[in-house]
Length: 179
Image 1 (cartoon, rainbow, N blue to C red):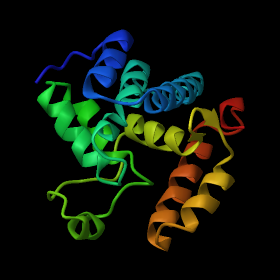
Image 2 (cartoon, helix red, strand yellow; image 1 turned 90 degrees about the vertical axis):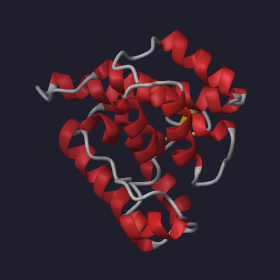
Image 3 (cartoon, rainbow, N blue to C red; image 1 turned 180 degrees about the vertical axis):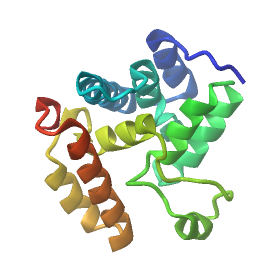
């Protein structure tokens, strides 16, 4: 496993080679752009964040959608990333980006290996959050995302997503990137 992050171009190539559709790639690029903006807003406020990791992790967060569009794309994506020898930090972003994270009991019910599936690092949280603000390849208000997910997901998942939203607001406040 490498500790070196792939370049943006290499990450895009990995998405294509894995079989991701053009729509998934466009979505990933939009998530990456927004995630970079959030990371840079953190830096402007004196918060240490690895912008390059955020950019590459966001580009690759949905690589598992090359094989499935179910919630399992996070696990499948982590497996693909491991097989490609990507850094552990990128693998963690991929497996922890779904919703506001997947709790241990939920992961067990899904049949996932025992692991942590809730974003832990700031980089993981930024990518997970940026993903909630992109529908297709365009930015949407968090309220729209939450309304949609509230119809599909159980209350504990929605609560974690709101908690992530509040944490991001606390970090970057009125950053235009969140509007």
